[in-house]
Image (tube, rainbow, N blue to C red; front, side, top):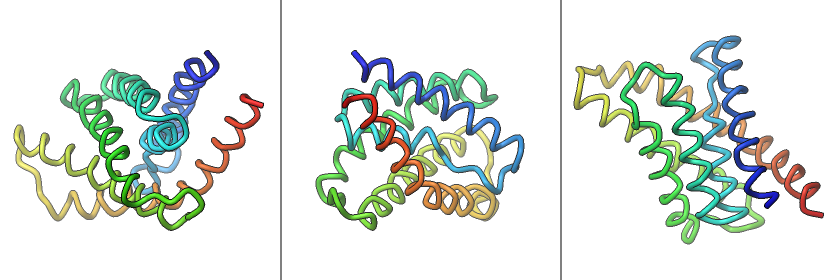
Length: 161
């Protein structure tokens, strides 16, 4: 029961943190915190909680974005499934490097899904996407990964002891 309550609370807090980071720091420091939460829930609790978090995060992001409705839901659920597949081959429980590699690949998948769907409906400059979306989002997400995962681990361990 605690896990079912923990997932929406964390998703909502991370959504608010993304919102405030975007308004304070702009587009250049915009880690994908919701994607990190989905990856963490997948590694800690399994695919069910990860998909639950992905759907909640996607609905929140789609509700407050001006883009295609359902795109965030689709990309985050796809990332939850890809985390399950890739963690078999890339993730070792005690390795920080393997966690960063997993987050890197999942972030790339998320950006590529968004790029492909946006490219179907409008003309997009690939160089601009690489310069203003791909590089900043991957770098800031990888920078925030260690901190977010350790704080979520502390939060989860306090709740379930």
